[in-house]
Picture: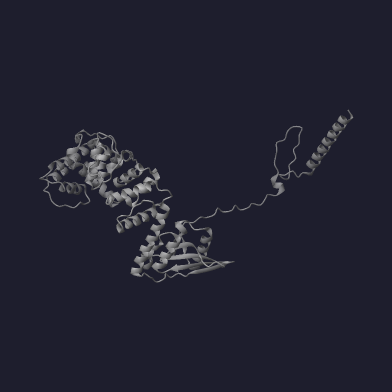
Length: 473
């Protein structure tokens, strides 16, 4: 309600005759430190206050011209958005690099986002620029904004000022043709991966990984992008992130570390072992143990099999469970230690076997008495067998089940066959012919059986006579 009221006030403020006076008043105000408040005037005043009234006064003049022209074009929705006004202020900081005058832009859409996109292109582009680059003006990185302007005037991607990655021509081509709504760092990584021969799916995986979080140690980051672009295997994002952390750790420990001769299948196993060791080391330092939640364990025997559900009450137990099940339950130490969660392990013991099989790792919210997660190995859904055991345990402890699992399709309930007299089929009556209703769907009518038998015997006799005549001749 408060937001709607604010927007209504902003709309009224813009449409009133005082908007031009508001902009001119903000333009003329002495430069001082201001904070953005919840009104259009305060937002506009704040951005004017960040522009020097002594040096580079053309920035202030450009910002005023932009606001007044968009207002004269009736772009009221655009001008009542603090985020859009920030974009306009950032554009004004490059007022001397505009390729067309602000006053020559004409509104062609009633959608604020389209108006803003059109205005950015009008001011800065003579050549096509990837649409994701427009987001630069909504951020704080002035270098990214400069890249947009340079691309708009026709500069090559490879010649952009301060570009952090050495691009090939193919990478530059891929960068210009990215259609996804990515941040600029992610777009750089995606184009780089595509240039190294990655599929679109693998390139997007790399773009969303920690490799896009910065450009420090860029030579090593580029080596990793090149390796993973063509690495064989099905790479999951969670394992990928852990593996990247492991590789940066190895590089920090040994600067001579390289990717030469390595494979994904071996790397991610090494990374998982390293990740668990780091977690165990951290746990050993804190020696975390906690009081069990107020829920009982469970034991059930069927034939030669025994099922046990037991609560895990130490960081070491969580790490062992995560190591066996190949998932991240070890990260739940804090939630368990403060009582927000309780973790249980469902184990299957078979008579004669020395070891047990873990069927599921279970998370319970103690206060809500809800089972919210039950995961098999690799975070897969649990089996029907495991689900059946959890159901019985939940009934014992008064828990509700709120997790996803495979549910079998219900078997159809057999319907009793209708009685014979209810299956009479009414066939149309034809003149000179009488239809008798039949009792069953099969050939069980005795009269019909006899008629068929007579016909078969007659055919046999005819064939016998034909054969006999042939012999006589």
